[in-house]
Image 1: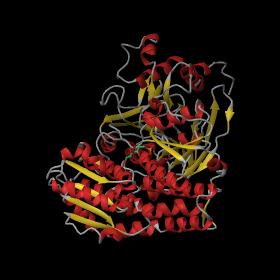
Image 2: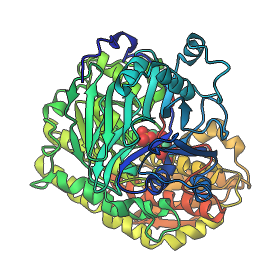
Image 3: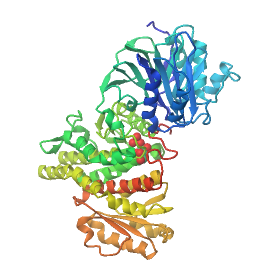
Image 4: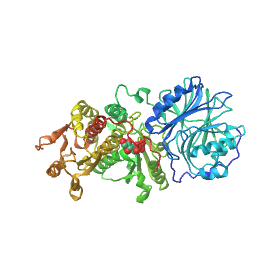
Length: 627
Ligand code: F6R
């Protein structure tokens, strides 16, 4: 490829604030019918959250065929049945509307002249480009994507690569683009800035996608397209170029997920399946990191100096991932006596965080793509902090923004509500805390070994909770009609409940608040009536008596209390409860694990019994790439 001579660099300020959205992208060129592959892959991408779906198929010597609609992939499937779509090269898309409402017209792909485009991201200067190329009366949709298609069409004079480079040099914003040129009916082009694109070969051709979940059915080897590079996919060849036309060898990654992990395998919902998978996910996350009975990150390539030289720790994450950080904070502070901040990634910039070269910033993320967490990391990089990621998705953007990565081996998490990713994030924090305590001398070898023995008991203790899930279902049945609900606890129990409460609200739509029990009297107890069920969690020796007093306070205001209590402490609480569930005994520090499983099951069963779409709660998307 010739040097393009186009200076694209000045257009991109990688440190600026970025926004993009959560669309799903798939592309295939090979010897199979593309329609089937695209529909299957879009189904696998449904979990990301979307409101429209579409596909474009190249037809040699004819216009590219486009089928799209507002609605579900099943609606697109029906449309495809009633239309004749033959072809072996094409692209597909699920759209989560931000720019232009939900309509058939705004669904992707968008076509201009001979060029068809799907897009994940936001083009910030779309109106400037609309004016520059006089597109006002020509656009059929309200999307910024159609503007990109039009700019590509403007620059296309026979060479797809040059058209892409010229377009990329003009557009500002975040994008991953899949592009078809009618004159090259067996080829798909892709280019990206910030928004991810992965690509791979499979037995029958070449594939590209917005995330690996769409690929795991077809292949285990894939690569992440580097930012501001162009991929050219042909059935037998994938070539990557930088914007100067220089060929670049992609770095292939091996995925350790298999296709059965992205299927329901007989469960009615992924959430249930993923809850049940937790003992195995925890084993997979901890066992490779135990050497001579001690925690070790040698296989992760993480030097001990990362832990010994850090004076402060700051955890940045969102939602559930942030809740795992709260548990990590309690562990690290109590075991190592080092200060840990846990900051919501979306608030990080606005809190003037005190971080420097002596700070270890730990970013926690299932997807590895959450834009707020990514932005916080970029800020941390500028401040010279060391950056460690705890992430589930290999090769994701956050892993590339950190010097070190601890992968959680939860496997693909498809349900929007995070379960196994959360508990494997917790497992990573137990390992980190123990390694640090051992290195810093606050734990001697014997104590560290004993801590690790207890950690290895977690899967079995989770299984004990899962085996008694019918009792939890009974509790859930009594909560189905609640409008508001409180969860109360202290210390680690409070952190655990913050997550349990988030789980309940997102999948059941019940307004649920986790409250530090001691704080109730300072205002919130005014909301407690006989209409507000309360879930109380008691797993820590140091709080049993205080917690019992707090439970009596809410009972005195008429609340029905559902008690989750560590078995060992159950006999010391003789009060009457609406229902109670005993959690299997572990050392107090580890009770978060079985307690979390019980709370996840409550949320799941309430949602199930309400007849809701457990895996896809309203308004939510799995991968949150919008600030
Ligand atoms: C809730 C949930 C979210 C995510 C949050 C961060 O069940 O899954 O709160 O934890 O959106 O996402 P990741 O972990 O992908 O960064």
